Image (tube, rainbow, N blue to C red; front, side, top):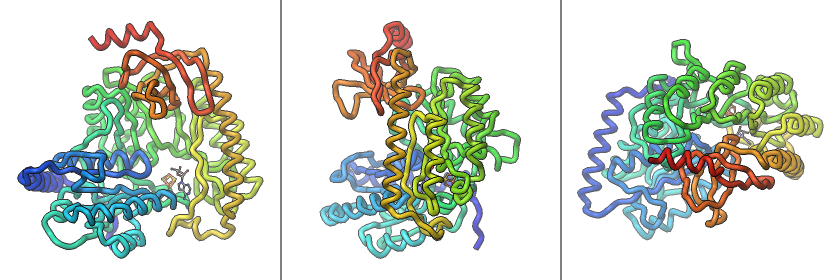
Length: 482
Ligand code: 5AD
Ligand code: SF4
């Protein structure tokens, strides 16, 4: 079996564009509007992939909809990171059975990380007969061809190629926001943390060429995007496979050199590769949000070793100290896995200890979920779920206290905030995001959606802060509009 990463040629992309034209002609020739629904599970990378899938569907004549009832085409873009994510995707897919019964012409496709695993592909094949076609994470660029086949031929098909991932340029995209954009800079992961399924379902690391990334960034800025989030499973490895001397810090500096007012974010960084050069680059560039997401996973050296993380709590803390010294207002966030096989009470205490020392603004915490085919799923001493849950709630309790304390220190300060729109919980309020990623809620007679404003923080709770737009900046924002 010849498994390698595959750079998709411009001829192949042109071939996909010819399928786009073919489907578009057929769809528009049907005389009735056709609708496509893309349901997305999982991480930002999946959201970015779904924006490409929606872009291709739109180019093929479909109107993108949120309505299951309206849809003539449904695509489920799945996640495999934890069992819960898989069960959710399977349950939603199960609910589409009745839609197909009502509308037999409905085409249902499933793609993404979950179905890139053989056992899940077989589940779909055998237990979900109303799913018409399936494709893996490496076949996204072939969606036009696959949809064309699903429309024109009878019979179901399932395509997950034996590659270590693909890299394709020149596909249409339909972005879900007019002011915030994802920008994938690389795909895949080489790290093989022992709990993680990603390297198996997304292949090896491959970086997009610097010219392609910069061209997309320039286009986003020229279209008025105010926030660009650079995406990769391990952005600190960016460029290692390009064959020229250019790393993630160089890319960040070049993006910040693009003229215009915008905020740059990035995720995710692996602590073993996050360099002091990167910290210095953030310190030197006001366009980069003062926020760093640095997944710790565990504070215990023994657990980190069993996870194959290749750093120690000491080296992690040294990097954090360097960051805090260079960028005193940096907001830190992290990922923690609770209840990894063999985690003792002392190991867990080491994790709590790091939380107290670092004082993260926020943490994303997960109970360990065994993933088929990963080394950790076969380790002895899996932790009973009652112990996992008990540790999980202790972790949250500590973090809530820290988050609340940090939020209180913000009261009275002024923050740069990107306004995201009307609050989901209160139609009388707007919501925005500080550079730290924290949500800020505020009342306003003026709709600043999509704008960056300065906001005075007036009140804080554990998860939210409340403020108001500072009058001086109202003038600045308004004059920017004219
Ligand atoms: N179980 C629980 N959490 C996991 N993560 C990755 N794999 C697993 C797993 N098997 C978490 C890690 C990672 C985040 C994206 O998801 O914390 O950083
Ligand atoms: Fe998974 Fe580790 Fe790669 Fe992150 S770095 S995607 S946790 S294997």
